[in-house]
Length: 264
Image (cartoon, rainbow, N blue to C red; front, side, top):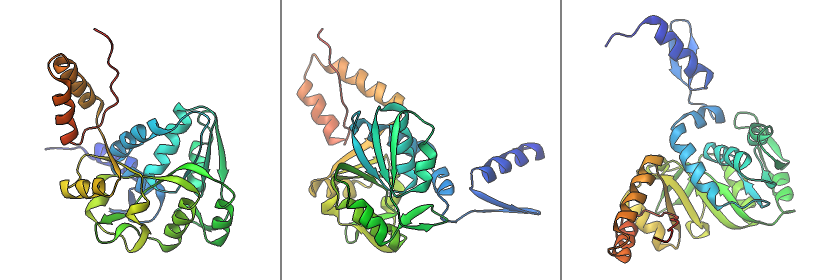
């Protein structure tokens, strides 16, 4: 396949602008830094679908906490764009800036020691600030998961900040690309028993999904719009035959849908 030099340069420019590449004279290398723009660029479309589904659990006028992950940034943006009068409490300076011009949203930025690369507040001051609030939901990301370790992170201070915020929340909700469930972080992030729900995109190992459900965790998959439409059409086509069987089959496949059934 022939690709022109102009096309290659444009693609490199776009990748460099997104933070995924570092360019130098004569070559380019992947950026493996902790910069959140870099992390958000990976699997962006998948993370966006996860965010859209997760935000369905947020009500207008609610006060929530959200930590600093790349999926969390897209959750915050979706909340700002689609909800009204929501108060967002976060330890992420990036998220506070990312959503500040979108929608009617109130932002409370927790204080603390500033990590320059990830643009996150951490440390004892972050904990003291978080203790001033009590919320129903905390959205968090994860750097890895195994049955043996639970949810894990790659930075001790950020993981500690997440645990401190979780103490002030009734429900802890994980939003993550399914790739994170095939790897392991280096420090403990959160005990599995503390998690209420997991939103992810297709790609889970069946044994992991089953294990999480056995722990009482609600596992919700984010599907493409066309997949939702196909599933809804299937249900409507079968609705007059045996609704119980249809729903049972969907449940066995791990498919969770909010279906509005209108009278025939």
